[in-house]
Image: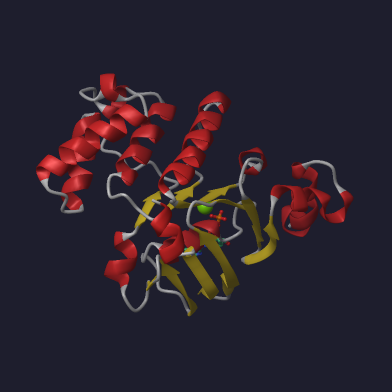
Amino acid sequence: MSTATSLFPDTLAVTNLSKSFGARRAVDDVSFSVRAGEFVALIGPNGAGKSTLFQMLSGLFVADSGHATIAGADIGQDPIAALAKLAIVFQQPALDLDLSVKANMQFQSDLHGIAREEAKQRIERWLNRFDLTERASELCRQLSGGMRRKVELARALLSEPSLLLMDEATVGIDPASRAAIVADVKALCRERGMGVLWATHLVDEAESADRIIVMAGGKTRFDGTPKELIKLNGHTQLTPAFLHLTRAEGKS
Ligand code: ADP
Ligand code: MG
């Protein structure tokens, strides 16, 4: 695990990435990095450009300019190598609700071409890690929103990614389950040396991040620790410090 850190100090490196929809610059010359084992929160109001950024990082949209590398592989030049190291939990739930928890996991491991015996072990390990073993045979439809998100997370981790992208992954989930998922993902960063980029508009989810990137109007407005963000402009708490930086967009 520690070797990943020395091989790939930056598990994600984004350089001058831009994307427009017509005249609107959804992502405007964005640069930042995520190191192995680091939990980075990307916070920004609705419309900031977070999902557009994620869509470029996951190869769904081609950037107008700039580039990004995942575990050293350029998404534009070498997408197969880059995407092999990436897992993503999208804003929209993507489980098949009429399949069991285990079948959803199996489907994902087949997509990644993981051999059946290896897949069986990984599925057991991840179900166990998220306390889902007893629910393995249940249809996903029967699970609560928080449980479904845990299944999506467990499923994303089957491919043992270097980088995990989470896009508003806790929307519609009760506060206790939200906090538990944030804590789980943070622990996984440490255990596996995996980098995480966690997009959210919920400022409290960023409090325990190693670093916070604030995005608004397609641009990054801040990149530093939660403490540095709080102190910026003389604040004492995260929410007013964040609102101060993004106020202009909030009023429009
Ligand atoms: P966030 O995820 O931070 O809420 P988005 O990336 O979804 O922000 O949106 C950024 C901007 O790009 C918004 O103004 C949004 O309306 C626009 N946008 C996003 N996706 C599309 C699309 N497929 N077509 C046109 N405009 C889009
Ligand atoms: Mg979004």
